[in-house]
Every structure is written in C-alpha cells, then in structure tokens.
Amino acid sequence: MNGKAWFVFEPRRVDDLSIENRSGKWMEYEVVKTICLSKIDYENFSTDLLADRQFIEDSISLCRKKEDCLLVTGPTLTEEMLIIPWNGCYVRYAALRPAV
Image (cartoon, rainbow, N blue to C red):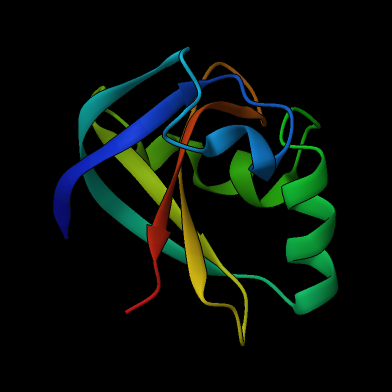
C-alpha cells in the first residue's frame, strides 16, 4: 500500500502530527509492514515517539528505501500511524492516516 501523507520530522507525541505543524511536509510512502499493538502499547507509543521500541528494531531492516514505512495501529483505534524509522529503534518521520 502506498500514497502521500503529511510527515513530521522527529515528533515527540502523536499530537505533533497535525497538518498545522509547520515542520511537516508531504511525502510519498510505501508500507512494508503493518504492526498491530495492544491498546495500552499504542497509547504508550503515541505519547513518546522518540523512545526506542523493540518492534521498530525488529522491522527496521525492511525499510530500505527512503519512502518505506511501517504502519502502526491498535485494535480499536480510528487512526493509524505511518512511521519511518532511522538508524535505531525510534521514529524519524511520522504521519497520521485514517484507519481503513
């Protein structure tokens, strides 16, 4: 799955991903893996996007091109998060996407 989304550079929290955030930019993306977190894990992740996460480390090798990203979701959420990891286990760029 691919498309275009408003990505923000090194956001701290999910609240930083609004389109009003001036540090963002439109970028092409291609989802290479979908990761479904439990509700509590998604909440923890969304409140500190710069913390190292094991699930990112486990999947970072799939992100070979600059537009490759991971789709992170929770079990009953109305939004999904596109993340582009970089040199480690944290989020370099992130964008919100309505759940399908």
